[in-house]
Length: 227
Length: 227
DNA sequence: ACCTCAAAAATGTGATCACGATTTCACGCC
DNA sequence: GGCGTGAAATCGTGATCACATTTTTGAGGT
Image 1 (cartoon, rainbow over the protein chains, first blue to last red):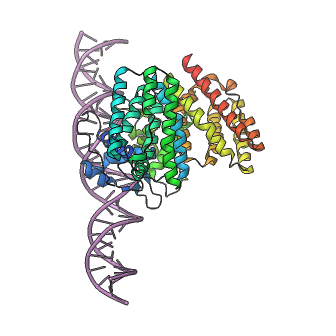
Image 2 (spheres, rainbow over the protein chains, first blue to last red):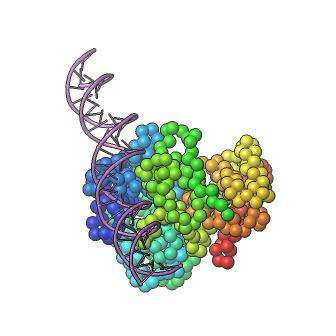
Image 3 (cartoon, rainbow over the protein chains, first blue to last red):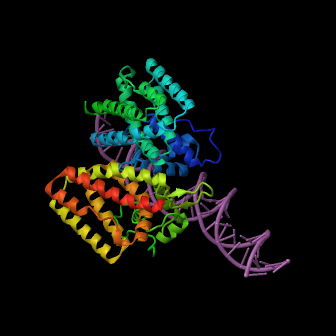
């Protein structure tokens, strides 16, 4: 089970974007896609060297991620690491995701266009391809792309931020669980039904399918944690 | 309408607490209690001088608050300020508060003790006293104390963080609205009924009363924004 | 009085240095 | 060979400096 490590620094990013934003995006994407395992300790200087920046912008990016509970400072020695999930916290994550993501899907459905549906289908195809190849990392990436392509349409910045924070927290553990399960029994995704509901304009069905998709995925993680 | 300005630096805080945490707590409390108006611009060096620290820990505290959308960087000139609420964002705040706070109240109710009920009654008395004196700031403070005394019992750190973030965002605008309405017509609080439900162990009623309390308060803000 | 515009002050960002605490690791002892 | 033990490396935190950009200000002219 190879961890690809930190995401590449986004070279082609707008020059207007501050370094600390670029560092944040690189770290956030790596966490959401589960490319850093739970419990892994990280350090400011190490990250700074890997990204070829001074420790300063890394500190601000990390402070942001700590605020989102995507990283934590160990109380004992004040060192930085990716948090592990307790059952209590995982249950909260599940509940919160089931609040906000069906709502985001519902709002996004109202702004859907034919172009976006095509892109969603592409995401889902990449997801299926990754599944059949046993490519867990590809699955994580495609699944993330699919969900947030829809959520981004919602014009609900607060909800979007909440969802991002929840994915930041669940990403590392999700990657471990799905990697352990193997791609064979990964969530029999409701994406197909969701796309059909989007095409037919049935917004309530979109909400429902998203709720089921989230529930099923989190249920797998819960079983893995308890078992 | 006098704004008391920044909260005092928490002198009596544990020496183990890092400076940036102390700065964060001071800023966060000031924002939640609405002591900094929406649109108000702040600056790192000014804050650092007011709190007698170097700009460095202030930067980290501010970065945390930006992550919580309690502060924002204006895109035009990259300067720091307290955000103003659009109707869209206020509606999201209302929805999210109605998700998480009844749940926190429900969970907290299961851990309630006689001692905490006494403290909640004290909070509510201070709230009532502030109301009769027309003391908006006292009302804000007592209301905050009441809610989070209960929420703190819930042993749900994620939900608690979500609630804090939501209060950080609504605090400044809430203070403006309530200050404009005058204390006469402030939310006819459901705290009394909530306390009775806590005493009788009716957890479902606790959840319901909290939902109504949140809804009523946010409804006032919504009317103020539209009107 | 009122505009104009250049000098001065203030701002966020990033880099670098210093410090105390903690971890890491190799050397030498049992 | 295993195991403490001290030196060296690494850690997070805070302060200070440098820089480009923006805001504020104040003097001069009309």
